[in-house]
Image (tube, rainbow, N blue to C red; front, side, top):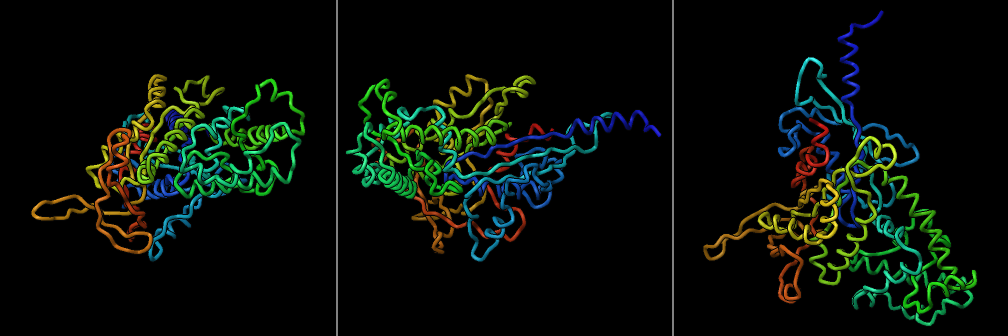
Length: 462
Protein backbone atom coordinates (compact mmCIF):
# COMPACT_ATOMS: atom_id res chain seq x y z
CA UNK A 1 0.00 0.00 0.00
CA UNK A 2 1.45 3.39 -0.99
CA UNK A 3 2.05 5.79 1.90
CA UNK A 4 0.41 9.25 1.82
CA UNK A 5 2.21 11.93 -0.20
CA UNK A 6 2.71 14.03 2.91
CA UNK A 7 4.51 11.18 4.66
CA UNK A 8 6.67 10.56 1.59
CA UNK A 9 7.70 14.22 1.49
CA UNK A 10 8.36 14.16 5.23
CA UNK A 11 10.59 11.12 4.92
CA UNK A 12 12.50 12.63 2.02
CA UNK A 13 13.08 15.84 3.95
CA UNK A 14 14.13 13.95 7.05
CA UNK A 15 16.69 12.02 5.06
CA UNK A 16 17.80 15.31 3.54
CA UNK A 17 18.24 16.78 7.00
CA UNK A 18 20.64 14.00 8.00
CA UNK A 19 24.09 15.49 7.56
CA UNK A 20 27.65 14.28 7.79
CA UNK A 21 30.73 16.20 8.89
CA UNK A 22 34.36 15.10 9.11
CA UNK A 23 36.35 16.99 11.73
CA UNK A 24 40.14 17.04 11.86
CA UNK A 25 41.60 17.73 15.31
CA UNK A 26 45.14 18.82 14.52
CA UNK A 27 48.03 19.65 16.79
CA UNK A 28 51.62 18.85 17.52
CA UNK A 29 52.65 16.50 20.29
CA UNK A 30 51.49 17.60 23.78
CA UNK A 31 49.06 20.18 22.37
CA UNK A 32 46.16 18.30 23.96
CA UNK A 33 44.47 16.45 21.07
CA UNK A 34 43.50 13.39 23.12
CA UNK A 35 42.11 15.55 25.93
CA UNK A 36 40.19 17.68 23.42
CA UNK A 37 38.60 14.68 21.70
CA UNK A 38 37.73 13.05 25.03
CA UNK A 39 36.07 16.25 26.21
CA UNK A 40 34.29 16.82 22.89
CA UNK A 41 32.67 13.38 23.02
CA UNK A 42 31.84 13.84 26.70
CA UNK A 43 30.20 17.24 26.20
CA UNK A 44 28.06 16.06 23.28
CA UNK A 45 27.07 12.85 25.06
CA UNK A 46 25.78 14.90 28.00
CA UNK A 47 24.36 17.86 26.08
CA UNK A 48 21.10 19.00 27.64
CA UNK A 49 21.86 17.14 30.88
CA UNK A 50 25.00 17.97 32.91
CA UNK A 51 27.11 19.60 30.18
CA UNK A 52 27.44 23.38 30.34
CA UNK A 53 27.36 24.52 26.71
CA UNK A 54 25.81 27.99 26.89
CA UNK A 55 27.79 29.26 23.89
CA UNK A 56 26.34 26.54 21.64
CA UNK A 57 22.82 27.76 20.71
CA UNK A 58 21.50 24.28 19.90
CA UNK A 59 22.38 23.18 23.45
CA UNK A 60 21.37 26.44 25.16
CA UNK A 61 17.95 26.34 23.50
CA UNK A 62 17.41 22.68 24.40
CA UNK A 63 17.45 21.56 20.75
CA UNK A 64 20.54 19.35 21.00
CA UNK A 65 19.18 16.05 22.29
CA UNK A 66 22.49 14.25 22.74
CA UNK A 67 24.85 11.96 20.87
CA UNK A 68 25.50 8.26 20.47
CA UNK A 69 28.64 6.48 19.42
CA UNK A 70 28.36 4.45 16.23
CA UNK A 71 30.61 1.89 14.62
CA UNK A 72 33.06 3.66 12.34
CA UNK A 73 33.01 2.73 8.65
CA UNK A 74 36.67 1.61 8.50
CA UNK A 75 36.86 -1.62 10.50
CA UNK A 76 40.63 -1.72 10.07
CA UNK A 77 41.17 1.40 12.22
CA UNK A 78 40.98 1.19 16.03
CA UNK A 79 38.25 3.11 17.82
CA UNK A 80 39.31 6.24 19.69
CA UNK A 81 39.90 5.17 23.33
CA UNK A 82 37.20 7.32 24.91
CA UNK A 83 36.35 4.88 27.72
CA UNK A 84 39.97 4.38 28.88
CA UNK A 85 40.41 8.16 28.78
CA UNK A 86 37.38 8.72 30.98
CA UNK A 87 38.55 5.97 33.34
CA UNK A 88 41.87 7.80 33.76
CA UNK A 89 40.07 11.07 34.52
CA UNK A 90 37.81 9.33 37.08
CA UNK A 91 40.73 7.57 38.78
CA UNK A 92 41.91 8.46 42.28
CA UNK A 93 43.89 10.62 41.87
CA UNK A 94 42.70 11.66 38.40
CA UNK A 95 45.14 11.13 35.54
CA UNK A 96 45.42 12.57 32.04
CA UNK A 97 44.43 10.15 29.24
CA UNK A 98 47.32 8.30 27.64
CA UNK A 99 48.75 10.20 24.65
CA UNK A 100 48.01 8.96 21.18
CA UNK A 101 50.35 6.27 19.86
CA UNK A 102 48.49 5.32 16.69
CA UNK A 103 45.60 6.21 14.41
CA UNK A 104 42.07 5.96 15.77
CA UNK A 105 38.61 7.11 14.71
CA UNK A 106 35.25 7.71 16.32
CA UNK A 107 31.83 8.27 14.77
CA UNK A 108 29.11 10.14 16.66
CA UNK A 109 25.50 10.61 15.68
CA UNK A 110 24.01 13.83 17.07
CA UNK A 111 20.24 14.20 17.31
CA UNK A 112 18.71 17.68 17.39
CA UNK A 113 15.57 19.67 16.71
CA UNK A 114 15.86 22.12 13.80
CA UNK A 115 15.68 25.77 14.83
CA UNK A 116 13.03 26.68 12.26
CA UNK A 117 9.87 24.61 12.20
CA UNK A 118 7.31 24.37 9.44
CA UNK A 119 4.96 21.94 7.77
CA UNK A 120 7.80 20.37 5.77
CA UNK A 121 10.37 20.49 8.57
CA UNK A 122 11.03 17.21 10.37
CA UNK A 123 10.68 17.16 14.14
CA UNK A 124 14.23 15.88 14.62
CA UNK A 125 17.32 15.56 12.45
CA UNK A 126 20.73 13.93 12.72
CA UNK A 127 24.34 14.98 12.23
CA UNK A 128 26.95 12.26 11.81
CA UNK A 129 30.30 13.51 13.11
CA UNK A 130 33.47 11.61 12.19
CA UNK A 131 36.45 12.32 14.42
CA UNK A 132 40.04 11.34 13.75
CA UNK A 133 43.01 11.08 16.13
CA UNK A 134 46.65 10.38 15.30
CA UNK A 135 50.08 10.98 16.86
CA UNK A 136 51.22 14.57 16.65
CA UNK A 137 54.66 13.27 15.76
CA UNK A 138 53.34 11.93 12.44
CA UNK A 139 51.74 15.26 11.63
CA UNK A 140 55.20 16.82 11.54
CA UNK A 141 55.94 14.87 8.36
CA UNK A 142 53.35 16.58 6.15
CA UNK A 143 55.72 19.47 5.21
CA UNK A 144 58.15 16.88 3.80
CA UNK A 145 55.90 16.64 0.75
CA UNK A 146 57.10 20.11 -0.27
CA UNK A 147 60.77 19.08 -0.41
CA UNK A 148 63.32 16.95 -2.19
CA UNK A 149 66.15 15.50 -0.11
CA UNK A 150 68.56 18.39 -0.70
CA UNK A 151 66.07 21.13 0.21
CA UNK A 152 64.87 19.14 3.24
CA UNK A 153 68.47 18.76 4.42
CA UNK A 154 68.95 22.51 4.19
CA UNK A 155 65.69 23.21 6.03
CA UNK A 156 66.68 20.93 8.90
CA UNK A 157 70.12 22.41 9.46
CA UNK A 158 69.71 26.10 8.56
CA UNK A 159 67.67 27.47 11.47
CA UNK A 160 68.99 25.41 14.38
CA UNK A 161 69.95 27.42 17.46
CA UNK A 162 72.72 26.53 19.92
CA UNK A 163 70.45 24.86 22.46
CA UNK A 164 68.99 22.52 19.86
CA UNK A 165 72.36 21.79 18.26
CA UNK A 166 73.71 20.73 21.65
CA UNK A 167 71.15 17.91 21.71
CA UNK A 168 72.50 16.48 18.42
CA UNK A 169 76.20 16.40 19.36
CA UNK A 170 76.74 12.67 18.64
CA UNK A 171 75.08 12.91 15.24
CA UNK A 172 76.85 16.16 14.30
CA UNK A 173 80.24 14.66 15.14
CA UNK A 174 79.52 11.59 13.03
CA UNK A 175 78.08 13.37 9.99
CA UNK A 176 80.80 16.04 9.93
CA UNK A 177 83.27 13.78 8.12
CA UNK A 178 80.71 11.95 5.97
CA UNK A 179 81.44 12.33 2.24
CA UNK A 180 78.18 12.48 0.19
CA UNK A 181 80.01 11.03 -2.82
CA UNK A 182 81.53 8.07 -0.96
CA UNK A 183 80.12 4.57 -1.25
CA UNK A 184 77.44 4.08 1.39
CA UNK A 185 78.27 1.88 4.38
CA UNK A 186 74.98 0.40 5.65
CA UNK A 187 76.24 -0.04 9.21
CA UNK A 188 77.53 3.54 9.33
CA UNK A 189 74.24 4.95 7.99
CA UNK A 190 72.24 2.93 10.51
CA UNK A 191 74.42 4.20 13.36
CA UNK A 192 74.10 7.84 12.24
CA UNK A 193 70.34 7.47 11.76
CA UNK A 194 70.12 6.14 15.32
CA UNK A 195 72.13 9.13 16.56
CA UNK A 196 69.84 11.51 14.68
CA UNK A 197 66.73 9.83 16.12
CA UNK A 198 68.25 10.09 19.58
CA UNK A 199 68.74 13.83 19.02
CA UNK A 200 65.11 14.24 17.93
CA UNK A 201 63.89 12.45 21.06
CA UNK A 202 66.05 14.62 23.28
CA UNK A 203 64.81 17.73 21.47
CA UNK A 204 61.20 16.68 22.03
CA UNK A 205 61.85 16.15 25.74
CA UNK A 206 63.46 19.61 25.85
CA UNK A 207 60.32 21.23 24.43
CA UNK A 208 61.18 21.69 20.74
CA UNK A 209 58.44 21.23 18.13
CA UNK A 210 59.92 21.28 14.60
CA UNK A 211 61.07 17.65 14.59
CA UNK A 212 61.32 15.65 11.37
CA UNK A 213 60.94 12.86 10.45
CA UNK A 214 58.10 12.37 12.91
CA UNK A 215 58.19 8.58 12.67
CA UNK A 216 61.65 8.62 14.22
CA UNK A 217 59.88 9.71 17.42
CA UNK A 218 57.06 7.19 17.20
CA UNK A 219 57.90 4.56 14.56
CA UNK A 220 54.92 2.26 15.06
CA UNK A 221 55.12 -0.71 12.68
CA UNK A 222 58.20 0.81 10.96
CA UNK A 223 60.45 0.18 13.98
CA UNK A 224 63.84 -1.02 12.68
CA UNK A 225 62.93 -0.75 8.97
CA UNK A 226 65.56 0.64 6.54
CA UNK A 227 63.10 3.36 5.52
CA UNK A 228 63.85 5.02 8.88
CA UNK A 229 67.61 4.86 8.40
CA UNK A 230 68.19 8.26 6.84
CA UNK A 231 69.02 11.76 8.06
CA UNK A 232 69.73 15.22 6.58
CA UNK A 233 73.12 16.06 5.14
CA UNK A 234 74.25 19.51 6.31
CA UNK A 235 76.24 21.96 4.19
CA UNK A 236 75.94 20.22 0.83
CA UNK A 237 78.49 22.03 -1.35
CA UNK A 238 77.91 20.21 -4.64
CA UNK A 239 75.57 21.65 -7.29
CA UNK A 240 72.18 19.99 -7.89
CA UNK A 241 73.52 18.62 -11.18
CA UNK A 242 76.59 17.12 -9.49
CA UNK A 243 74.45 15.57 -6.74
CA UNK A 244 72.10 14.04 -9.32
CA UNK A 245 75.09 12.50 -11.14
CA UNK A 246 76.43 10.66 -8.06
CA UNK A 247 76.39 6.84 -8.24
CA UNK A 248 73.31 5.01 -6.94
CA UNK A 249 75.38 3.44 -4.12
CA UNK A 250 76.77 6.77 -2.88
CA UNK A 251 75.87 8.16 0.52
CA UNK A 252 73.85 11.00 -1.01
CA UNK A 253 71.95 8.80 -3.48
CA UNK A 254 71.20 6.17 -0.82
CA UNK A 255 69.86 8.71 1.66
CA UNK A 256 67.96 10.53 -1.07
CA UNK A 257 66.28 7.31 -2.20
CA UNK A 258 65.25 6.45 1.39
CA UNK A 259 63.89 9.96 1.81
CA UNK A 260 61.83 9.60 -1.38
CA UNK A 261 60.51 6.21 -0.29
CA UNK A 262 59.55 7.60 3.13
CA UNK A 263 57.94 10.61 1.48
CA UNK A 264 55.94 8.60 -1.10
CA UNK A 265 55.16 5.39 0.80
CA UNK A 266 54.70 6.67 4.36
CA UNK A 267 53.83 10.38 4.37
CA UNK A 268 51.77 10.74 1.20
CA UNK A 269 49.37 7.83 1.90
CA UNK A 270 48.84 9.14 5.45
CA UNK A 271 47.96 12.57 4.09
CA UNK A 272 45.83 11.25 1.25
CA UNK A 273 43.86 8.74 3.34
CA UNK A 274 43.23 10.86 6.40
CA UNK A 275 43.52 14.59 5.72
CA UNK A 276 42.24 15.43 2.28
CA UNK A 277 38.66 14.40 3.10
CA UNK A 278 38.00 16.69 6.06
CA UNK A 279 35.32 19.39 6.11
CA UNK A 280 36.35 21.29 9.24
CA UNK A 281 39.53 21.58 11.23
CA UNK A 282 40.71 22.80 14.61
CA UNK A 283 44.42 23.34 15.19
CA UNK A 284 45.46 23.08 18.84
CA UNK A 285 48.57 24.99 19.92
CA UNK A 286 50.40 24.79 23.24
CA UNK A 287 51.44 28.44 23.21
CA UNK A 288 52.00 28.53 26.97
CA UNK A 289 54.34 25.54 26.90
CA UNK A 290 56.53 27.22 24.28
CA UNK A 291 56.39 30.53 26.14
CA UNK A 292 57.46 28.76 29.29
CA UNK A 293 60.37 27.03 27.53
CA UNK A 294 62.14 30.13 26.21
CA UNK A 295 62.87 32.04 22.98
CA UNK A 296 64.54 29.31 20.93
CA UNK A 297 61.73 26.85 21.54
CA UNK A 298 59.08 29.53 20.95
CA UNK A 299 60.56 30.34 17.52
CA UNK A 300 60.83 26.60 16.83
CA UNK A 301 57.09 26.20 17.46
CA UNK A 302 56.32 29.17 15.20
CA UNK A 303 58.38 27.68 12.36
CA UNK A 304 56.77 24.24 12.75
CA UNK A 305 53.25 25.70 12.62
CA UNK A 306 53.98 27.89 9.59
CA UNK A 307 55.26 24.88 7.67
CA UNK A 308 52.43 22.66 8.81
CA UNK A 309 49.63 25.00 7.74
CA UNK A 310 51.01 25.03 4.20
CA UNK A 311 50.20 21.32 4.03
CA UNK A 312 46.44 21.72 4.26
CA UNK A 313 44.07 22.61 1.45
CA UNK A 314 41.84 25.49 2.54
CA UNK A 315 39.03 27.02 0.56
CA UNK A 316 35.28 27.34 0.10
CA UNK A 317 33.51 24.17 -0.95
CA UNK A 318 31.33 23.98 -4.01
CA UNK A 319 29.70 20.89 -5.48
CA UNK A 320 32.53 20.46 -7.97
CA UNK A 321 35.27 21.07 -5.42
CA UNK A 322 33.59 18.64 -3.04
CA UNK A 323 33.57 15.93 -5.69
CA UNK A 324 37.02 16.49 -7.13
CA UNK A 325 39.11 18.57 -4.73
CA UNK A 326 37.82 18.42 -1.15
CA UNK A 327 38.86 21.34 1.04
CA UNK A 328 38.55 22.41 4.63
CA UNK A 329 35.96 25.20 4.62
CA UNK A 330 36.07 26.35 8.24
CA UNK A 331 39.01 26.53 10.60
CA UNK A 332 39.55 27.17 14.30
CA UNK A 333 42.90 27.77 15.94
CA UNK A 334 42.95 27.33 19.69
CA UNK A 335 45.50 28.05 22.38
CA UNK A 336 45.13 25.12 24.76
CA UNK A 337 45.60 24.91 28.53
CA UNK A 338 43.92 28.29 29.06
CA UNK A 339 43.29 27.22 32.66
CA UNK A 340 47.06 27.46 33.27
CA UNK A 341 46.78 31.27 33.31
CA UNK A 342 44.29 33.47 35.15
CA UNK A 343 41.08 34.45 33.31
CA UNK A 344 42.02 38.08 32.65
CA UNK A 345 45.03 36.78 30.65
CA UNK A 346 42.87 34.82 28.18
CA UNK A 347 42.43 37.73 25.69
CA UNK A 348 46.20 38.24 25.68
CA UNK A 349 46.66 34.52 25.01
CA UNK A 350 44.42 34.75 21.92
CA UNK A 351 46.27 37.83 20.63
CA UNK A 352 49.60 36.06 21.10
CA UNK A 353 48.28 33.05 19.19
CA UNK A 354 47.17 35.31 16.33
CA UNK A 355 50.59 36.97 16.30
CA UNK A 356 52.29 33.57 16.23
CA UNK A 357 50.26 32.57 13.15
CA UNK A 358 50.04 36.03 11.57
CA UNK A 359 51.28 35.09 8.08
CA UNK A 360 49.18 31.91 7.65
CA UNK A 361 46.12 33.78 8.94
CA UNK A 362 46.61 36.54 6.35
CA UNK A 363 46.67 33.94 3.59
CA UNK A 364 43.55 32.24 4.94
CA UNK A 365 41.59 35.47 5.17
CA UNK A 366 42.70 36.47 1.68
CA UNK A 367 41.35 33.10 0.47
CA UNK A 368 38.06 33.92 2.24
CA UNK A 369 38.32 30.94 4.59
CA UNK A 370 36.33 31.52 7.81
CA UNK A 371 38.78 31.25 10.70
CA UNK A 372 38.36 31.85 14.42
CA UNK A 373 41.03 32.11 17.13
CA UNK A 374 40.19 31.28 20.73
CA UNK A 375 41.65 29.98 23.95
CA UNK A 376 40.25 26.94 25.72
CA UNK A 377 40.83 24.22 28.26
CA UNK A 378 39.21 21.01 27.08
CA UNK A 379 39.44 19.53 30.59
CA UNK A 380 39.94 21.93 33.47
CA UNK A 381 42.89 21.41 35.78
CA UNK A 382 42.63 24.58 37.93
CA UNK A 383 40.13 26.93 39.53
CA UNK A 384 40.36 30.72 39.42
CA UNK A 385 40.90 32.33 42.81
CA UNK A 386 41.82 35.70 44.33
CA UNK A 387 44.40 36.35 47.01
CA UNK A 388 44.55 39.39 49.27
CA UNK A 389 47.85 40.97 50.26
CA UNK A 390 48.15 44.28 52.07
CA UNK A 391 44.59 45.16 51.11
CA UNK A 392 45.12 44.44 47.43
CA UNK A 393 43.31 41.57 45.70
CA UNK A 394 45.13 39.70 42.93
CA UNK A 395 44.09 36.84 40.65
CA UNK A 396 45.53 33.39 41.21
CA UNK A 397 45.04 29.74 40.25
CA UNK A 398 44.44 26.83 42.57
CA UNK A 399 45.37 23.35 41.40
CA UNK A 400 47.27 20.17 42.12
CA UNK A 401 50.61 19.53 40.44
CA UNK A 402 51.44 16.21 38.81
CA UNK A 403 53.42 15.39 41.95
CA UNK A 404 50.31 15.81 44.09
CA UNK A 405 51.14 19.18 45.66
CA UNK A 406 48.25 21.60 46.07
CA UNK A 407 49.38 25.08 45.04
CA UNK A 408 48.01 28.59 44.74
CA UNK A 409 49.98 30.46 42.10
CA UNK A 410 50.01 33.40 39.71
CA UNK A 411 51.84 32.15 36.60
CA UNK A 412 52.53 35.61 35.16
CA UNK A 413 51.40 37.92 32.38
CA UNK A 414 51.01 36.67 28.82
CA UNK A 415 52.45 39.04 26.17
CA UNK A 416 49.94 40.29 23.61
CA UNK A 417 52.45 40.20 20.75
CA UNK A 418 55.51 38.19 19.80
CA UNK A 419 57.95 38.51 22.71
CA UNK A 420 60.80 40.95 22.34
CA UNK A 421 64.33 40.12 23.54
CA UNK A 422 63.61 42.21 26.63
CA UNK A 423 60.70 39.93 27.54
CA UNK A 424 62.90 36.86 27.68
CA UNK A 425 65.43 38.52 29.97
CA UNK A 426 62.95 40.13 32.37
CA UNK A 427 59.74 38.09 32.30
CA UNK A 428 58.57 36.09 35.28
CA UNK A 429 56.27 33.77 33.38
CA UNK A 430 56.29 30.23 34.77
CA UNK A 431 53.54 27.68 35.25
CA UNK A 432 53.60 24.15 36.63
CA UNK A 433 51.91 21.16 35.03
CA UNK A 434 48.66 20.29 36.78
CA UNK A 435 46.74 17.06 37.06
CA UNK A 436 43.08 17.19 35.94
CA UNK A 437 40.49 18.29 38.46
CA UNK A 438 38.37 15.59 40.08
CA UNK A 439 34.97 15.69 38.37
CA UNK A 440 32.35 13.55 40.15
CA UNK A 441 29.63 14.59 37.70
CA UNK A 442 29.43 13.02 34.27
CA UNK A 443 30.19 16.16 32.24
CA UNK A 444 33.81 17.34 32.34
CA UNK A 445 34.55 20.89 33.45
CA UNK A 446 36.00 22.98 30.61
CA UNK A 447 36.71 26.48 29.34
CA UNK A 448 35.14 27.48 26.00
CA UNK A 449 34.63 24.02 24.56
CA UNK A 450 31.12 25.25 23.76
CA UNK A 451 32.58 28.17 21.77
CA UNK A 452 34.74 25.74 19.79
CA UNK A 453 31.76 23.46 19.12
CA UNK A 454 29.61 26.39 18.01
CA UNK A 455 32.21 27.45 15.46
CA UNK A 456 32.94 23.95 14.19
CA UNK A 457 29.48 22.37 14.02
CA UNK A 458 26.94 24.98 15.17
CA UNK A 459 25.76 25.86 11.66
CA UNK A 460 25.01 22.20 11.01
CA UNK A 461 22.65 22.10 14.00
CA UNK A 462 20.47 25.03 12.84
